[in-house]
Amino acid sequence: MKNLRKLGILLLVGATLTLASIAQPQPGWMLMDAEKDGIHGISEQKAYQMLANRKPRKVVVAVIDSGVDIDHEDLKDIIWKNPGEIPGNGIDDDKNGYIDDVHGWNFIGGKNGSHVNQDSYEITRIYARLKKKFDGKSADQIGKKEKVEFALYEKIKKEIEEKVANYTTEMLSIQYLYDSFNDTRDYIIKNFDIIELNPTTLSALKIEDEKMNSSVQTLNLIMLMTGSENFDQLMKELDGALSYYNDAINYGYNVEFDPRHIVGDDYNNSSERFYGNNDVKGPDPSHGTHVAGIIAAKRNNGIGMDGIADNVEIMVLRVVPNGDERDKDVANGIRYAADNGALVINMSFGKKYVHDKKVVDDAIKYAESKGVLLIHAGGNESEDIDIENFYPSRKFLKGQAKNWIEVGALNWRQAPDLAGSFSNYGKKNLDLFAPGVDIYSTYPGSTYEFQQGTSMAAPVVSGVAAVLFSYFPELNASDIKKALLESVHKFENIQVTRPGGEDMMPFNMLCRTGGAVNLFNAVNACMKMLK
Image 1 (cartoon, rainbow, N blue to C red):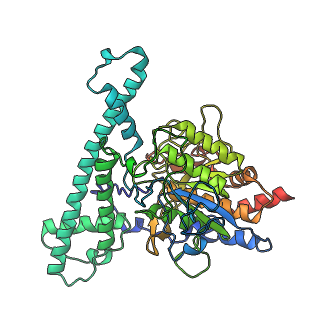
Image 2: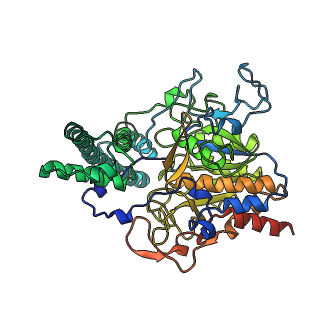
Image 3: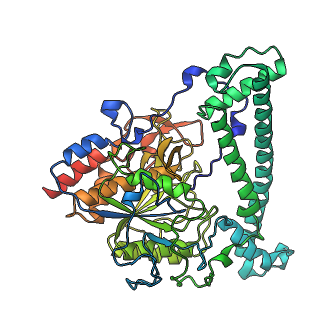
């Protein structure tokens, strides 16, 4: 799902913490092996040793996301290049309907090179439509045929008003912390000979002023609990949280905000396909860049980090703004990927409301007909997706997609913290878990950062799937999906904390397979299929 960068700071203040409870993740933990390293990664080294005598083929993985920094030092060599397109000549050389689509396509850009950056949430767009119809009306003024729609209008109106009120309060609280910590820093610099503020230097301070001592302890506590190595890193996180709340209030839940004119399409025509531009980076490619690195950042080059798959090219499809993606764009991204050679599509996004489910369902069916495997992030709301609906999903109005894998986020910690506390779950509708907490990957400007979410777990599975497609060309999407699901590392008889709660439950009740993706096991499964 989207990297909301929401810190939950309000929950941290006043919490009790001991240094013994603090541990830092290892940057490459997603690749590690439980038996060798004591961490439930994907056993990458063992898997590649087993594949040493097999000849791989090149595989294209489509990243439908916010855009990707295609010039990143660890990604530039693995970005897909459209073999049928001559760059920069202003001609649709391959006759696929998209001019100069060298590395993919941007479905939320304008013909003049402009971009949709912020966008509203789907709930807000639905509310804006219904508001024109029902604003100022009471239930006794509504006809029988409109009662269902009117009930939805009242429900989402209340939800939006509550969200805006809560977010405003939380933003003010974080702003207070932000300002307070700056004052605390100024006090320390003025009164102590300290160059860098970090947990070590703060813990050593002895301050007689009771009020200021309390401020320093709070600063130290939150720095520890957010995993911030120093003051600047913490303030960057707080600044990100402020930006999240500000965007949610001013754009996400703003009924008056609609940037779709930038794209210049007929938004009511869901069958329209050929709009947008070829700038696949966009104004904020941070989320997509992180996702792409997990899948296939250049391996064994001594730079930054290693992605999971070698012999992979990343096709970039910009569909996700800072807000909710639109169904029309999602459908077009899926169709573009299927038409242009992708075997795996990674979709690290989702929402709780839907505008045009049919157009996305039809695109999913189309991808299935083309032999494409779709990997989708399960969501970060700590909810049971057997009960709560999220979109897009494998479920059609009739039947369900056979080429779909739904992914939850695995923690690097052991039980009872094995499942990411934010991860959605579901015994029926979530397929498996994958590393998704504190994942180190590529970030714009040839930098690297830790991020977490099911948005990070899905590309782990996409990377594993890409390896299987590459080294086992005899197998199709159905075979690869079967291998992935049947070869999970199972967590049998293990009790974990339910995501979002404090009660305990068996891990095998969190997803269909009861386990986490494992490349080594999946390679074994594929080899057995070929015998």
